[in-house]
Amino acid sequence: MEPQQTSQPNTAPQTTAPTSGLQDPAAMGMPMTPAPIQDGSPYFAGGHAVIKFSTGEPGYGPETFWLVDKQQKTITPFSSPTSLQAVFGPDFQQVMSSVVTVMPPNVSPDGKVNNGVLTGFYILDPEYSIREDGSSKPVDFTPGHLTHRYGRPINEVAEQDAIKKLDDTINGLKVHGQSHNIQPAYLDKLIKDSKLMAFYINALAYGDYEANDIVVDILRRYHLAGEHKKGTNQA
Image 1 (tube, rainbow, N blue to C red):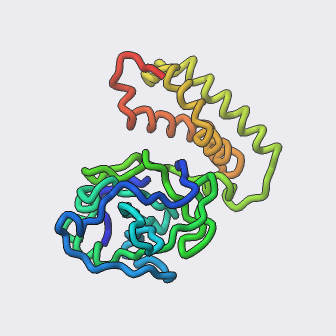
Image 2: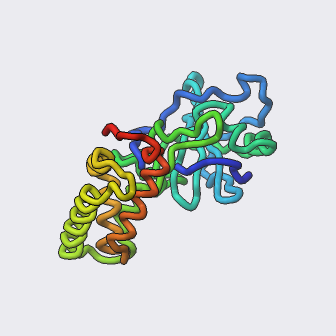
Image 3: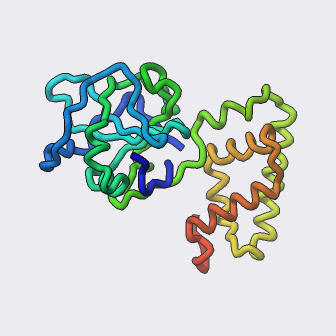
């Protein structure tokens, strides 16, 4: 049941598991075995599982299917039945017969699931939904990645040093970025991404990463976003 194509999916969370969006494939004439509500773990194959959230009550509403990634501990919504088929291809029917329905969990403001069989996983915002072609907005980290500090204790001195190093790195790119065809406006846009900045500070303070590693990652994001193809970049 290995997905054929998803760029896995920061997350902007729900306080309860969303229940609107993707209609049940059965409504589209796609036969599938009804999945019981259970307290058991989702069925994982190749590190992924497909689930639904439901209380089991009649009239609960349209159902969204979610891709659970065991390694990244993310729960990503599918945007439509077509996106399910795009991801799983010929294994679609087998996947649908293995769907597990679980009770909607309690979810903290950062998207973390606090109870049930998916405790510790993170529900991703709809902007990370898997599209009809099977692609999705990539997620490089979740709030969980920002709190584990690479297994090290909090070091405020290291964090302050990391903040200064990150500031110097970005300012240096603003001055010399033309050699990489990177526009200052793009860097200003990155600075506004508080989660990305926290990710970089965490990596510098606790992950033994250096300023050059941050530059490489910024350039990677810049090229993936296609900004290098533009004559100018608007924030």
